[in-house]
Image (cartoon, rainbow, N blue to C red; front, side):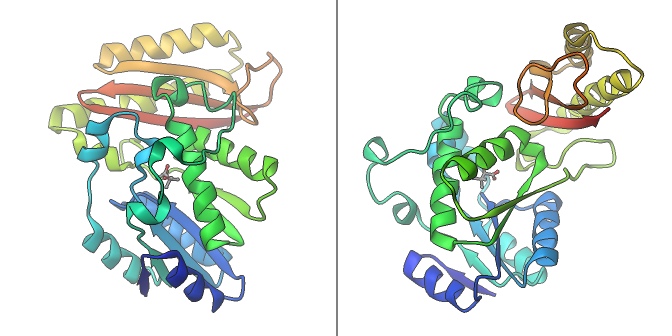
Length: 279
Ligand code: PAF
């Protein structure tokens, strides 16, 4: 496995892959959820490139950026074990050679401003900008993202369509702990008590899926009931919403492809999760 830090080294390395490249963009601190993306990428492409870059542009709070776990040596060992061909670990200056305030930004309006975009202003501009740059640098045929960040995946899809970026996007199902908690680097922030409470988000999503499958269609009532259950379990709900899966718009009563999106605070950590519903 090769590790490169500059765009020149990266381009040289991927030029040997003859266009058969799948990219898995990450911010490191890898867990089984990331490794599932890497394994999926390996099935789809001869060569797999993983990027590890903690993107300052997508953090709305400096504290959050500073506290983000940095575990490069462990991450590299895990990726070597998965047979990854190339790891791109650019320093900040390689991704953002200019000061952030004058750097070109990529914005996908509308969908970037709701849910996580509303709670974390500027977050998705940071995501779409860095992902666009990574696509231009690596030029992958395929890029693999986790469906845990469902809104992020839709935003990247829109960006790829709107800017005609020649990459095929693939979403991979969320990997969960035994009690349903979605795997996330942010789970590291949970103490023992918070870790016990955290699966209440998944339970609320699961119960709402069950209710929809049984025929319930009063979406606001279902959302309120779920938020109430999360609060009584000790979570502080941020949002809980039943939406059209294709674009996160308000669903009609007869909509068949839905997604339920939820976010909640527990201590310092903000958990997000979602479940798709095919009726
Ligand atoms: O999902 C993530 O880890 C990040 O948002 C991504 C896609 C690597 C961009 O920094």
